[in-house]
Image (tube, rainbow, N blue to C red; front, side, top):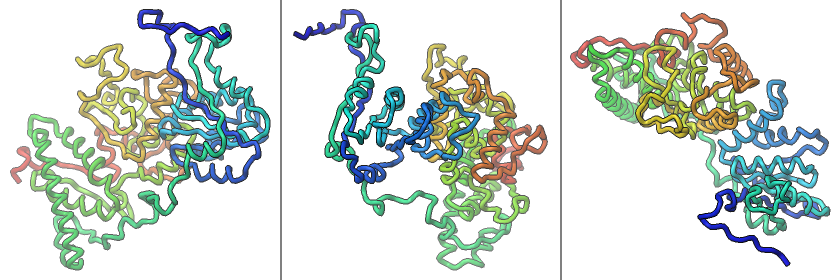
Length: 508
């Protein structure tokens, strides 16, 4: 006769209450080793569903490298002396969590040993995903199922007590049930293309004149066809109107009592995050720049651009360095540390000598924003301690960033890279008050400026990017990020500078 445990009530010991169950593990029985199932698994792979194919002859630590390869990491870069096995498991959890992976499918899971099955179950719990084990063998999977189901329970009590550990549900299902739970995706021709593939962003605009902004619109009127000029003129006028709205929002920063550097920083962020950096092509960025220059001049602000210093195809240098293609190459990097610091350096066009002061609380949980205070000092503006604000408490580990003003927007296609490294730092126990970048070999130590620069240069060399504004050494007079004008490195790299012509702002 089976003894029934009494049901706990709200007045009983909280430790005796049932705990929340873990994610479900499903064992798909494929005793005949159907070859069609392997082809189906290949069709099921998406960004939120990975298929792990364990290497047949491998050591006890090779499973994590197989998972990294399934997550899209470059196999040539997986085995690295800078990355040990525990850090590799943290990187796997961080990348998969940031990508919102919902299903982890393991092909030919009957080859796994007991410890490897338990590691996969722990990983599925950490990233909140379902685990599917394809059992392609006539052998009985009961022993493996029992080991996974009892993971986390106390061996001293035999796993019988409700408070001895969480319960994990393990289900054995057939192939037909598996096909019903995970249907095949839509045909490939119904899926949209990536935004930077098979498209010419400059196809809508012809070659534009290289004259300066006072003569740009008149020269376009003489050389372009009527319909083409009408489209350009419409984009030009709309951009000028947006610039007028921007100046009205920041008109107080042009007054003599305010610091002029604040307007330069706001303009730098406006051009980088909203207008030039986000332009779909270099020619569209040139049209926007000329309209912005003309609109600013009427408000007493001279925005100068020196295209000859950028070499040929200077308008292409106006857009962001951080393209979707570069982010896809960075996602193939195993180290979240290297990918995240490269994203920041390329997006801000700044040397990483100031990134060492970033805190985890300066980063949005989803990786969409970087929060910075608007201080003038180039060293202090990243050393933010929000504890002195009234809405901050020492025990608050999930702060609201509504009181900050220095919000820097990341491109949406780079958010998961930043979120992955934040998840990795949280796994290291960083919380919100530790540095966002730590020493990869020892997370208890903060990263140094020199090591971050080396990481960015090494990563850029691997993905084929040449950051001309970044080099080794301490040449603060020439290297961007080391000068006296913080938060304007993006404009400086594109040879843009601002001069206030009128103390009253709009008297020109």
